[in-house]
Image (cartoon, rainbow, N blue to C red; front, side, top):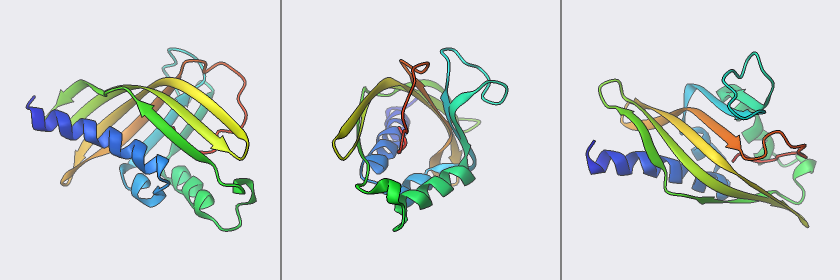
Length: 160
């Protein structure tokens, strides 16, 4: 793997987190392939999002619906608006197959979501499965494994 490819892959992860933090929702959604999924398992080591419950398992269409809700003027559940911040450890390239145009990265994170006077802190690991599409790396699957995935949660408003 050459250094420029490694850095390009890492930049995708940082760019995705920054789009979320800055609420650039359309730009964030465009990072995902049409067949992409966003998965947040309910248990440690979960291997199947369809036959086991998940905190979240959404395809691109559902992600788009969430984005429209977040951008909506009449989304009263977002008054005041939710904000967030990602603190990412340097992403590691776990797999790269340049011939197939596929890669997987893993990133430890701390994530803060705030709305009004309430603030929630989450910690975990994000895995990004990427596919080379056209002239860019795009996200096929983002898996967010929370340290305390089996805890009782309130509403998670944004994306980690």
